[in-house]
Length: 491
Ligand code: ZN
Image (cartoon, rainbow, N blue to C red; front, top):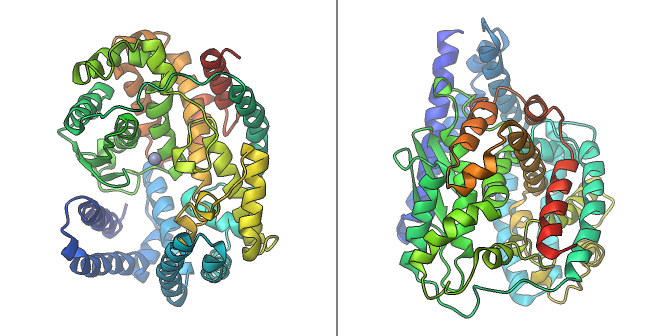
């Protein structure tokens, strides 16, 4: 590979890692009054990155690569894609979208205060118009929504997703109805105070227990948990502690640890190249959901970890046996709010958003009718009647920012995660015995070898097919939830 091209790739990765670090600090330790200075510094870093990316020399090097071998081809392909996205959108539109995002956020906050969707609608209307323009500028796929989807999930298309989501809906709606008809599990968390320091200490024990390397990463606190990878040797996670219940801290930590294990698992030889990243948000999310739900909400996992949690909370967990605890952390309940949803109902919230977003981009739904459509779909999918706009179309901040096409990656993460885990169970006959002994290392080694080391060499679906023998399917997730919740709720 041309030396200049290689050096430019490394330079871009270095700049990107500094942007990550500055953003991590902004969300964790930066004093309030640092916002202005940090905003300016980040703006400069990002525009430097953009200039170096759209630089015509880079275009020439990429178009005439003397690349040899698959890895170098893959690097060229990944960087060429990123560069093409960055050059297709006119600067005027980038600025307009940023301004619309700021105005959208303000209007969304006002609308939530007033509990009135109409207050948000004009700003949303403007954002949707700009997003249509943006999609046209990118020109990816067969319909506008494809271009937005592709930005987060390269290669994914609406026409591919729609039947998958319909199939999933047909599995979940009756399953949720059946669960609703059964008695609720005992709530072992409510009405108690869960000490902050003890929760924190337990989450710091969980991280090494699942294989997260604390010499190559750390955990801090933030309002909204996230993970951020500067390099394989420096991966930052955050979690959130609530005194009413230990669940957000425990499962937030496991979720972000899943993201973090992926970031720590990129092949060392890919350091400072475009290959040291996930090929999509959906694949990244498959790792977080796998550790949070398939491992972290399993009975064997808690057979090992409940006694350890009990050491921190002897009186709060007095008399709570492992079965009761396991049932309590897998409580399924129809709720209005996506971020509070369990792993069964969660996907119904995503399907609702996908249908509305796609219809908006196609011009089949007017912005003024969004909240009515939302409420109608909440009835069909979840059987609930929305009373307050904040429980309906005003609940997520994403549309205010102008993010469309992002939500489906959460459900893709659930589907890919279940398929990967099914493959892991076939490959590792002792998986559950190991987990029950508190040993997750064989599973992590398997994920490293099949998913993490691959980085961005293949598209997500190609990788999933290599590992599982099939691409995107509903069956594995459907089998998982039917079996697990069948046992939990006696269906
Ligand atoms: Zn996540």
